[in-house]
Amino acid sequence: MTNEYNASSIKILSKAEADERFGFALADSMAERYPHLNREFVLSLVEACKWSGDDAEQVTLYYATHKREGVSPSEECREAHQQVLRDRRSKQWRSE
Image (cartoon, rainbow, N blue to C red; front, top):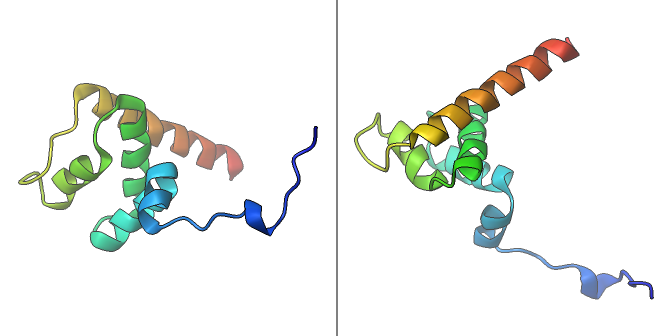
């Protein structure tokens, strides 16, 4: 059996659906909402939250408002975030 790909196979996602399905879309939305935060920092937070199960929007809000609002990231999220940053640095150094 073959799956035929045609125009009816294409689904246009709403912004909310894209944010829910794709971490980079959520990071872009939050980077637009909080322009003073670096997009790469937000993307690394979203990735860490996926690993830890923390709410990415609440954790980003925590950092965006200088720790006055939102939910403080769990210890697991903090560790995951540090690992994500280490991995990115390592990949960057290898590519140079």
